Structure formats: C-alpha cells, structure tokens
Amino acid sequence: MVRRVHSVQRLVVAACAAVCALAASGLGSGVDAVALGASACGSATAAAIAAVDATVTHRIYRNELSGSEVRADLGHVTGAGDLVGALARGDLAGVGAATARIVFHPHWHIVRLRVLDPSGRVLADVGGPYVIAPVSGRLRSGSKTVGSFVMSVQDDAGVVRLESRFVGDPIAIYMSGRLAVERGAAFPTAPPTGSVARIGHDVYPLIRQIDHAFPTGTLTLVMLVPGPAAAVAARPCTEVRGAEFGRVAMRFARLAVALPSHYTGYAATVTQFTGALVFVRAGARTVASSGGPGPAQLPTGGAVTYRGRQWLVYSFVPRAGTRVYVLASAA
Image: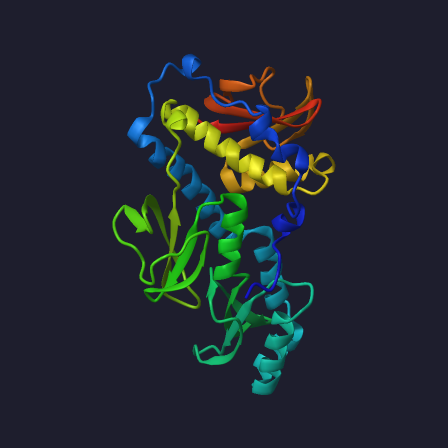
C-alpha cells in the first residue's frame, strides 16, 4: 500500500472549482489549425495523444529515480550513523534496527530499504513487497566501504495513483507477468500484447513502458488511450499534441489548493512532469514562469518562436484576470 503522498501531491491535492469549469466555459485555447496550415490528424490522433501521455508517465517514473526527494532520502541513508556504525561493527541486530528506523521514519518517504554487506549478502530488508524504481548506493565509514543498499521511494500503487491524477488514462502494472495493480479499467490478468487491447467491448491503443522492479528485474506498465472524439481527430496533429499537454496542465490546476498562491510551484511542477514551459500572466505582467521571461507577446493559442525554437501554445484562464500559457515543443 502507498505509505506517503509525494511532494507534488502536497501541492496538488484538492480540486480548484474555477478551473474545473474551463472545458464547459470555453476558456481554454488550443493551437490555431489555420495558422499551422496542417491537415486533419485522423487515424494518427490516438498516437499523438499517446505520445504525450507516455512522456508524462515516463517523467513520473524518472522522478522516482532522481527527483529532489530521492536525493534527500539518499542522504538520509548514507548519513545514518547508526546504520553505518552497526555495519562497521558487524552488528546484525543493529543493522536491522537502523534499517527499520529509516523506513518507518514519520517524515521520510522510503518505502523499502535493503542493506547488504561488502560481499553482497543481504543483512536487512524492510518495506513493502510491490516496490519499483530501485536506487542503489554505498555505505562508508570514513574511507572504508562497509556495505551497500538498495532503496525505493515509491511502490506500484503510488505510481498508478500519480498517473491517474496527472494523466487520467486507465493504467495497470504487471510484475512477473501477472497483474499487480490496476486503475480505471478491468485489465486482463496477463499483460496485453500488440499495439491495442480489447477491454470489454472497447478497443484501446496501448502505451507500454518497461521499468525497473525492486531490487532487480523489470515490470510492465500498461496504459489505455481512450478513443478521441471525431472533432479532435479533425484537428491537425500539432494541435492535438498541444491540446493534450494543455489538458494535463489543466488537471494539475484542478488539483491545486489555493492555486493563485502557488503559481510558481505550479509552473515548476507542470514543467517537471511534462517538459512543457509554463507562463502565468496577468495582462502583460508575468506572475510565474518555468521558462525565463518568455516571449514578449504570447498568443492564446497557435504557435510562437522562443529561444530559437517553435512552440505550440495552449492557454486557459484559472481565474478572472490571469491566464496560464503552456508551451509544448513543436518537434
């Protein structure tokens, strides 16, 4: 089970009613199809959407390997004097006690920790069974290596929960060829093969991602891409791509607590998990940015050149007088 809520979830925890009404109110603006001069995306629409959703999901997983909390937790392990001291003394009971203290610390986010001696023998292994994204390191006493460790800050259910909040596609994780956790649909017990999956009477294009299991091996993450509406398929693929990045950014905004007080954190979080740049402006004044000063003029939709590159623009109004601009790479 999930033992913690990630720091980004502490920023995006409850619904923001003003943004929830955007789709109905027409306050979101996508890419201008005429300006880009492209034909309808048609049969490639699902693939265009899937590529964006896969990018976000990959970034969710990558954050569990090298995000700021991972770096902090690595420091908690390598700097644990009781653990290092017990290893140096050969005190097995002390190693076990120190490992448990680290995992069950009320303010840290380590869901599993395995400690090994210099020969690779496991001395302690504490935490949940379905853990992903292992991160390894060495434990030193002075200049001497007294052991090593493998830790994780996330489990399978946690990753599924993050994807459901940030992207919203049905998702499942398979470990050792068997269904471990699912959300949003009833998945088959074995991982689906091919490029599509039939769930009930519906056929979905698939996103398949191979990630690392704990402590070794792999797991398979599968996402189902809902079929796009005919109106979406009639748009150019560039517009579909820009609008999908915008949709994810709007999901983050819907989850934000007191969004106007956290625009800077919001912009950084969207960029962290999408790679898109975010600018929040009140008229001509920049309220928050994850990409420097930004273009002098930002259209509400279409394309813009910034830093020598072309970007697709999607924008929406989270509250009167403020507009969020999401710039996704056109490449």
